[in-house]
Length: 294
Ligand code: PXG
Image (cartoon, rainbow, N blue to C red; front, side, top):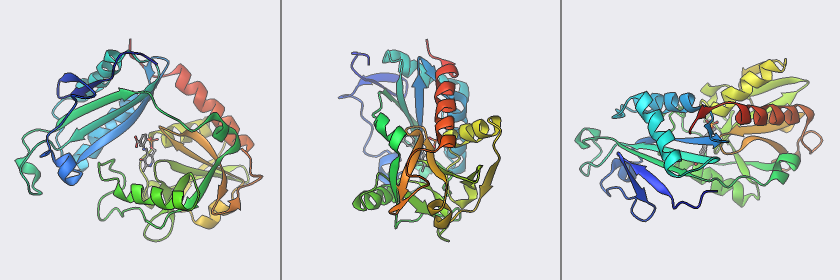
């Protein structure tokens, strides 16, 4: 970890943590009107850098938000912020808000979107979780449906995920499974879901109500490279309960096994062989690929 005090990027300038402030009239605060990315960097390299920049532009397009810089410039801003903080390993929170405007929903009275980048270290699940697995429970709160706000948009509206997190924690679990309005499995509060059954790997379709997870895509590719069959399907809780192996993927969690779901032991209750293989392949990839920062 660097001992430089945190320097936060806001609209072209760096500020100390104490001085990094935005307007109370920013529609990101007033209406959750904005988009974000959570990005990891390992060994001085940003993992899936272009993919995160592409996704935030897609999220912005879907909510009719114009990002006031090009993709190249936004990518460079992310790199510059990590550099400014002299970090080698850590986590970036990239946020684009609608910007300061008037009270009232209309985004057209916000003059210009604001770009905020925080580069910091990240607190992860303890290593023991990657060996023993997480405990999961089903959340009461459902994923929003694509006919309201598309769950593919990584927006600043995370209240349903926050409520779901409260519910799974109340059930004594570490992560929560969110179902869609039809009761099919969508994803976890901040991770995508995979199962292994009879040697085949399954994950819910994005249309089930999940994010186009960047780790999800990386893992789908690793699965295929390892010679396993991968199927994107509609999935029920039954499929999860009866899986041989169950694991989650996400920028923060990476690839993490699940030992128990809704009080059912998954498989043998310890990390399965295919999950172990994929954790190894994933760790190798993050250490050997990515956009150089320095
Ligand atoms: N589903 C949801 C709802 C998420 O928010 C994922 C899946 C996994 O996607 P990626 O692209 O990360 O593989 C996410 C990711 C944070 C934070 O700071 C949130 C995420 C990732 C990293 C940090 O809250 N969400």
